[in-house]
Length: 539
Ligand code: SPV
Ligand code: MG
Image (tube, rainbow, N blue to C red):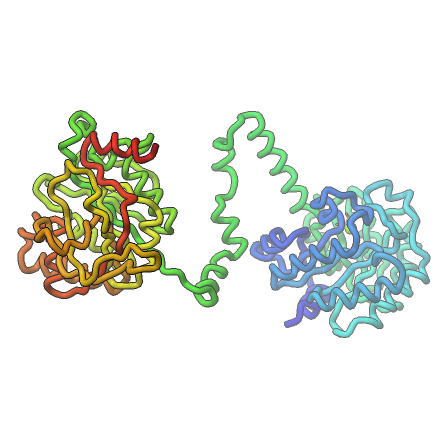
């Protein structure tokens, strides 16, 4: 049903209906959720929300813009408080067109002069519009509307301006004759008596709307007894928000903290709900190119025996390098490359592995279990694109970018300049590949892995695996299937297996492994010498 028709039904219903003030998309939505069947776009409230006075300081196009946000956020009809129509009959005609285009159910125009002033500010000193001129506006509005159900409500200010009951009644009849669909009879009396008197004299030739801002303690049944059609609660949302904003800002100012107010205000999630954020998230799935999120698994269970006192109460992954733990460096590099969902396998002194935004899986018996076992414990995380890293390496972001750019299923980061590494290292995970890296610009940066191990013949070594690899969805499946296979066939050997042996076993059975060649720019942090080396590398 059209908004205009819905509003028309409210105006003509046999018992009084309520319309709630709103002044923004948000407040309109709240009114609708509460159960109100229509909203009053109040000039006072909209002006106040702009920080302006209610005397046409806000231009009519400002008002219409707000109205547009309001109608967009609700399905119930909006009745616009259109002041005097923002000019003469011609402005009214233009206004009606614009309102119809915006699915506004109706407008209320008041018989005062432009620019008008709010009725409660020296109301008795305000001049009324000439009756015939105002009837011309009503006629112009009715002649302009295309939708026969669009509602034009004429507002009578005679009682407020001190012109008396006769004037109010005369105007009421003339406005009905001019085509008004309903009349808003305004009163600033503290009691309903003035309205009651009017209703006693009124011939019921059209619906009557009231705004009991000043006679607020009138019981609702009185409106019913008087034959009122619609009661507008004209400004309570705006006034309530002022009370609330004043209270909350004062408390924050005085306590210099937001902790006291936090439990008294809605959570941010409620704001998101009112904004219908969920709909956007769902639409994004439909319309935005989906970037697969890449997970990160960091194998950091071991102690690191060569750090002496440094690993007394924490694993080597938590040893500080350049002011923060190695693990934080890895996390930062992961994050910079878009790897956000990070899981750490912690064993030795696992309680010391505390970093924000990292999920921790605890590896029991870390002394006897190898890091392939750690990976097995993280099987549920190996269900899509993923980067797997040792917890004791530092590497440049460009290295990870390069790795992630490789589309192959399982790709190992390999340093082809491995012979330049520190000479005090003994067992290195070396790889042999189909083709060596080319150091020429634009040359070979990837190859297929043929063998991985600690003891490869000196010849044909293509490089050193640095302890970093990535899998795509297919690679993750291949890898987790192999882990499951090992667990089923020989769980004890899986328990003691390290990653190099695991990758070797993987390469022998199912998978094609690739390498992403890279020259240096990483460091295996195994002892205090490496820490010194890191610092000198930096300098
Ligand atoms: C409004 O809400 O802006 C009105 C009603 O026009 S009143 O403020 O009572 O005049
Ligand atoms: Mg108003």
